[in-house]
Image (cartoon, rainbow, N blue to C red; front, top):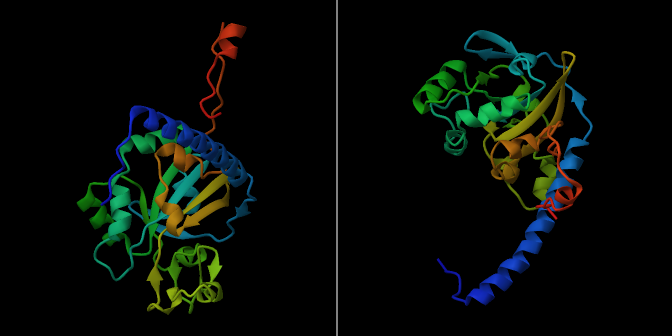
Length: 247
């Protein structure tokens, strides 16, 4: 492993100042991308998916738990497996009760869905000590429709918005693996007057970019749902002096 070169304080400050300009440009580009994401069209979910949950049958609308938004993590757990995907497990281990509380404050629920039968999900959940809602999509089209179970005998070959032909053109042998096989993903939904809409999904390396509840809210149609408010009684001079941390 290579280490950073040794420099003087002045060299460090010059390099850090140059990097800061790039970081601010990245922040502005990210904010613009988040706005573009929120402006994606939403598509109504017409299928009446029925999932298996600890209390019985659950529909997609039920997963919202009365909130306006829902983030679903497509956790890799094949019906034949006895344990959940190690990578999905590691990521879920990092989600704290506070994470859920922060999402709930912004009218957003979080749930996991896997194709394995509920008994296996419940056992793995208990072993890991998780309190997250987790539902089984076993014997439904949900995983196929949202592109996380790859089985060309059931649905056209496509993952991360690329077809089998596009993968092959790029020199990838992705679709040559024994099918069916599971892949990870994350999907966002919005409910309006009891109607459920799909607003966003991400797969592959997009799942690696996580940074707390704000990152997850940035994936949703309503975003962070907050605006900076001027404190009452703030003077014009104080208002003008307010730092713009993103500029």
